[in-house]
Image (cartoon, rainbow, N blue to C red):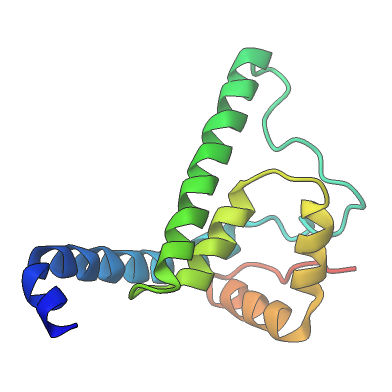
Length: 136
């Protein structure tokens, strides 16, 4: 094993740098994202489109594709970080937040309704001078 590390010093260094950047990025991104969620985001029984109606359908399809591709890439990076240094589970959750799949909104509502999650999210929102999330 020591031989592997000696032969791949550059790879180990690159993985360490990517891990540190992703860790710092998630520390900045998560609070930013939670503060910007509308307070009533989880109160509706169904989620509507977040894009304005005046956007052409072709741009909506492009936005959908880009968002899902970026989400899948982030999920794959998170899976890799489960065995490499980094915030693997956090990256997987961020990626899943971007990817569209059946039952996603129901899963998000279930997760945010857990007391530790909602308390943490509302604590961050309080620090950002935002009203608490309405969770039904």
